[in-house]
Length: 182
Image 1 (cartoon, rainbow, N blue to C red):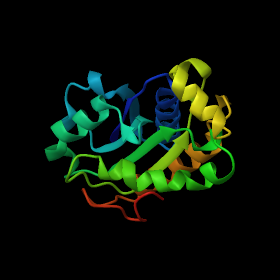
Image 2: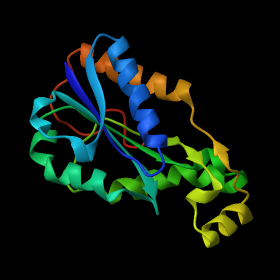
Image 3: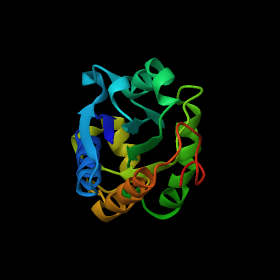
Image 4: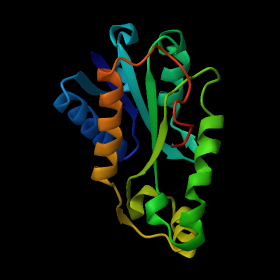
């Protein structure tokens, strides 16, 4: 099965997670490639999609939302999984516990009609220069920490689950099978 792991990234974390996801899918015997959504020429050539974006302001980046909107006719007929990359693991205390509440906000901003089997929120790399000056100040005030918070094991497990569903011959299209944000 030809799977697109399409992504929009701001600083590279989302690209790395997409590439890791595609590698797990290939290891499971699927044909998969990670590509920036802006470089996808023929969405119809893919049989399944894993789409991801960095999250800024609790929203996917414009190229990822545009891809989903512009190719909705293809996406509704194929299995789709989505992931978002933010900074929940960089936060501490109550802010970290509130991070899962970001998922429905992200989903509400996605193009209407986009159906997906599951949505995962992963943490990425948060460096000082990724935030504007006022953003750095607020980030530090809420106890945020700079660093690499990617969890390769979590990505691998999620991607392995996708591979298992694809090998089992999941149906076409469809909404969240295990609940949005899981």
